Length: 277
Image (cartoon, rainbow, N blue to C red; front, top):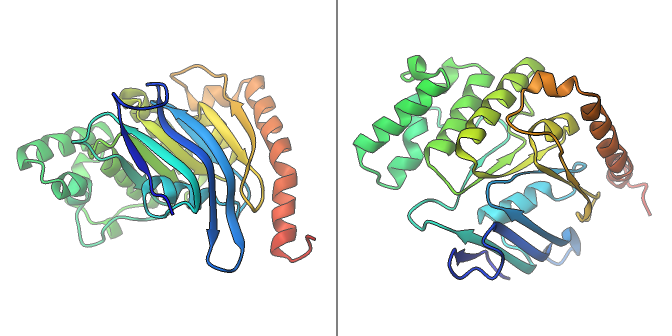
């Protein structure tokens, strides 16, 4: 098995604009013959908001875990261009609540910096700036059980950005929230991303969410996961979420992506029910 290859910015074989490069990535499990990913080849430029959509069981999370270094590909190569070795390569935001319940909002936000042994004065300054920017400073001494679901995910986003990673990996972070909180967090994430322009790889089941947030969208097939389509999102930035969704072109793009996805969702359902040949 091959692990991720970290490539220095001065020695990268790819263009200096490419931060993540996957070539022929396959993932299979044990002796069962189950193939989760089959021949994924993509290049993600530095600073791109890259979104992956696909039916359940198509390998989206497996792909993200490989990028995070939590799993290894069975075949193919994964290269990540690291411009600053002193910074973490990536931070990951998971689906649902991933905060430490015994830590306050402040301590959760500071966790990554403290693990890197950043001087406490710098930790205090960074955490204060981010909590104030997102309206959570007055909740700094609260514990996760005292927060709403939307506030918990705000803290998760802050914890990732405070740690200043080169790449942010997000696995359906808003799927458990109601539509109002999703809308607010879409606006917050876009504002933070506009300010930092980090490379983001974002997984979602929602076509609306993909079009709202992304620069480019990869549609995946039902298992085994392959690239079915790569779609550029033509809308300029910065984006106002409500104004964007009023545009006829927005609805047309959502419809086009759903047309790409519909057959894969139906095939995934048939596979789950044991009806596919």
